[in-house]
Every structure is written in structure tokens, then in C-alpha cells.
Image 1 (tube, rainbow, N blue to C red):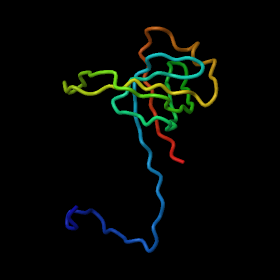
Image 2 (tube, rainbow, N blue to C red; image 1 turned 60 degrees about the vertical axis):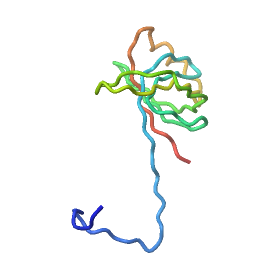
Image 3 (cartoon, rainbow, N blue to C red; image 1 turned 90 degrees about the horizontal axis):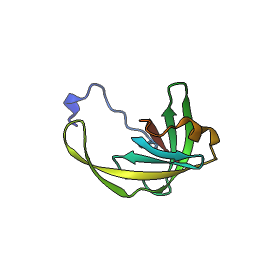
Length: 120
């Protein structure tokens, strides 16, 4: 970016500083069990990566950690801009069994899940 276009002066650091970057994704829940969840997403998730998942139900919001077990290409869909986009079918295994989750998910529900990758 051109220096003249910056809103503020940049400051050079004497030593490098580490930063935590998060990768976000959102998707539609396909199915769920006490051990894991299947989600349709528009970006390929790396197998083995861990995500913090948040699912908002009408009466509450559940958060859990899930490890990506597989994420194959499921096909193509048309997005809100009428563009053709790839869709992946991500399968994540929960860190611990969530027996209360499966009871809240009903067949035919259209639930959204937001995901933030956990970097170690």
C-alpha cells in the first residue's frame, strides 16, 4: 500500500512479535451425533485441525471443540451472488461426547454453525 494513502504512520518493531491468526468458517449442519457433526462448508478444512464450533439453537447456544476427520468435495452450489461455488462435506469429531446435542437437533432443522480454527 502506498505510504501517502495510509491513515496513520507505520511503526517498525525492534523485535518480531508473534501473532495468533484464526481461520473462520461457517456452514450448514447436515447431521449430528453425540460424538461428532457433519457440516457443509465452502472451504476445504485441513484434516487434523481443531475448530471451536458454535451452534445457535432458539433457546440456547452450544460451543464445543471438534477435530476435522475428513473434508471431501461434495459438489457445487450456487451462492447468494448466483456464482457457482465448491461445497465440502466436513466431518468433525467432538473432543468429548455431547449427549445433549443430538436431542436438540431435529431432522429437517436448518441450523448454521460458526467455526474458528484453534491454533496451537
